[in-house]
Length: 313
Image 1 (tube, rainbow, N blue to C red):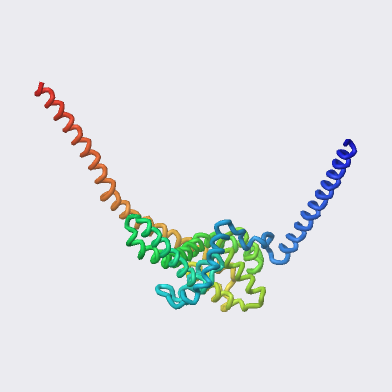
Image 2 (cartoon, rainbow, N blue to C red):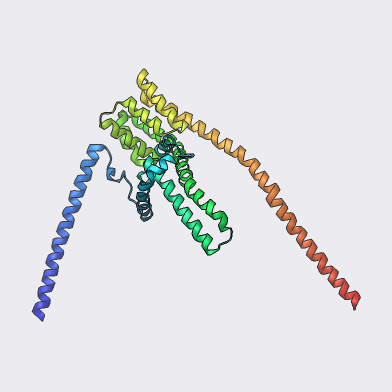
């Protein structure tokens, strides 16, 4: 028995030592590969360009795979969602869940059928207003993907607007240090996760594949309709044609976008004041008056009952 225990302990230590050795080799090889990727593409975390999917995203993608069966029907029933409009929304939203136009059109029909099933079940179970649900649930299933996609595109373009001034300042400083535009973009985008990183990473990949620079700029314009971003890309195209220094272009655009951001903040503040006044007038003030009036009525009723009791005695 002692010999068996000693042999088992020896084998455990042997295999544990082999495990430690292989783990060390793996870390060394991984570090060497990361350094090679960094030297090649200018990004140490280039393998993270495609974010790790969450559990919810995996389930949504599995559900969306069933939309392919209804793609042809969805392309025929394209109310408020023409194929060219959907393609434009997908480009501006960054193609969430790897959606294509055909799959998106099928998703509308799939969710419409699910909505009809839900409405039917609620109607059979006798829920309140379930009769209206036979119409509301299918309509909600049809329009929900359209609303969510347009909202996603709008939020992505707003994020571009928010990150752009700091991005331009950083690139401008890098260019003034004598670094080329491509190297500067590769070095800077890793500090701006989000739409900016996605767009300029794709821009750099297109240049690496041999796409002409002006055409790559045009693709950036096509994928994004944010006014400030479009103004930047058009200035870069004009500067490339006229030979204007890129660093000067980035610096001027950064100052202009900061000025535009201040004007937008002032505009939002000006629009917020009437809304606050409206809420105060029609919500807060009536509520306060109702509370004060209610307390007065309760006090009057209490005093009346007290006097009635005194006179009754």
